[in-house]
Amino acid sequence: MTNKGRSIDARPEPGASYDLLVVGSGAGGLATAVTAADLGLSVAVLEKAPVLGGTSAWSGGWLWVPRNPLAVEAGIDEPPEAPLDYLAGIMGNRVGDPRIKTYLDTGPEMVRFFRDRTAVDWIDGNKVPDFTESPGAAAGGRSVCAAPFDGRRLGPWIAKLRPPLDVISLAGMGIASGKDMAHFFNAMRRPASALYVTRRLAKHGVDLVRHGRSMQLVNGNALVAGLMRSCLDRGVDLFTDAGVSALKHEDGAVTGVTLTGGTRLHARRGVVLATGGFPHDPATQARLFGAETGTAHYSAAPATIPETASAWAPRPAASCARI
Image (cartoon, rainbow, N blue to C red):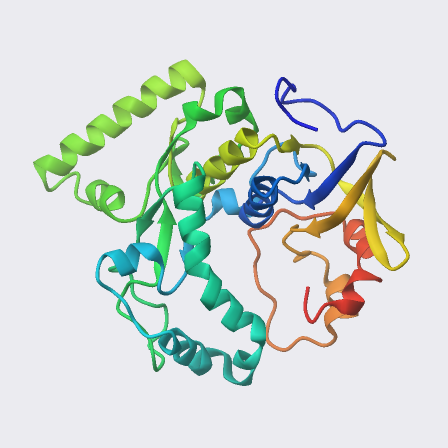
């Protein structure tokens, strides 16, 4: 199935079958959809909210990927064990999880794939240091950030992109870290910065008049927009207002989902849960994770319906080290 010609408000067809169903439209879910579609699978993304992007669209759009191509091309080529030494100082005995080495080994390949084959582009973090001063910390070269994205490339689908948070935008205009933010901080002190900010504000004003929102997307908004464009280019079906209430099990495998409202969809190859968890559901957290240490924390993720997580949790969690 393909979304070519499909309305942005189209609903999933009852009984439709896909190779892969992806639940959740944050960066992880959309990246999964792009990769699967690039390998020739038919894919649908199911998002319970009326907009796409989840908390990824509110984020800074940064990824910690040591030994990434942008760093290597700039001459920063550290040994493979260096990032692992840094993580060992932070994570202790948990650093032995084999998935960590897999992440470090394949992260650079992921950055290269999205840069070379999709609508996503990156800016380097070659001068951005690691967060903590643990042994093995680097002064830069381990991060990448989504490059600014022209929202007009999404066409009508721009209406389905979650806007940036008001508290970190200026009248809906995102401000990128680095050069962009530096100019805004220095607008009252440096003529060059004042001119830069004036031009940015003027462009934003034109965008508001013409499009109702900023078209110069930055940070997490740019990352999600690039992934959306890449999904659309590959015929991935993107559905909003499509919450999942249950998973379908057959012979020990997950073979489909039931949407809120009763619509059933089938998955020939599997279902990926990329929903970001359930930070506002302490009962389900306690049931799946056991007693947690530390204090409660704030989550930027919107509150979700606890029953949704509870409906998914019993069987899949049995084979998960941590959800």
